[in-house]
Image (tube, rainbow, N blue to C red; front, side, top):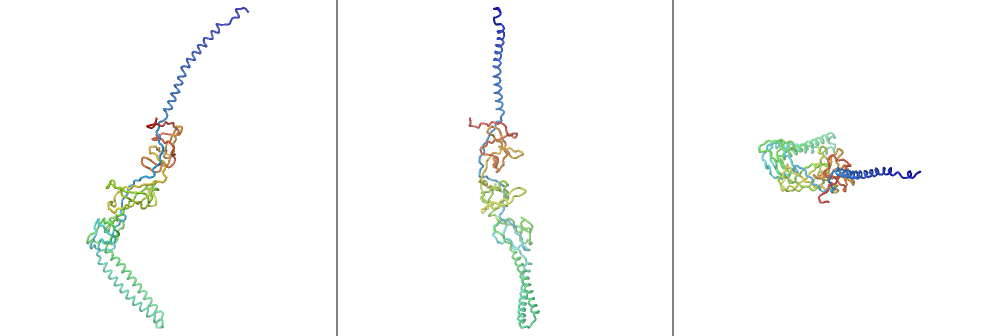
Length: 392
């Protein structure tokens, strides 16, 4: 080998070195352009995900109030209200009480003239006297025959006949006495009296009017009604309590009345009794509230509003109605979990406070409830909680 062949191939190495340098420069330039673009894309995607999460307002459940006021319409009625009818037939001789008159129990309202009935009573008393005389005679005769029977002066058959005649005459006397008592009772009805202390609300007779015994008791202004009397010192007010509120109404429930003719005035009332059964048609409980009306401010037949203070010894949690969703499976609320995702929960509603409701089951006191959730909201949606005023 000569010296010329031993020299390295320098032109060939230089030929590969230049492309390698160019390739490195190109890769550096390419990396310098792609990396910022990828970082920008990642930042844009992150920002898009953040903006895609719905912004919601959350509320924390609070304790429901122990006392709730229930307002119900009621009809004011007299404590006792009755129509007075004639128990005997005749003509009105005189009347003593007109509408608006305050009467006492047993006070005479009118006199009925019954000459035929008076004559019947006289005849009945005469029949009673005749029966009494016949009985006395038969009794004495029977006693004599019993004495003669002891000495065998008469037969047993004759003595029994006289004794039987005495018993028959006694039965006739008792019948005559019963007839006298009946007619005496009818004659006593010539005086129409007030059944209780109250006010005369209707008078349907005048002097000389013919009245007949009987009538249709219990119906106002019915045929044959002479007077109508109402007891209004104490008034009854009947209300229908909804089924959801019925368990909280008791005799100790505080109540008062308001009427439109006395603005701002409250009439003290007391729950007196209830029907003890729900009306199957309206699902309500009939409750009677009594009101002291000795001053006569309230009038029977008036419309009133009854205020009941319902007390619950174990109140549950409370939410505004704006947080409720009404779904086919029941009333639902939307909460936010620790991962800022929604969860739908079915709850049971208790008392209704108007803008708020009591939630009996399905809600914890520490849960964050979404206020005004969208109707299309589902479980698992990402959300962001809106910052409240005063927070940073």
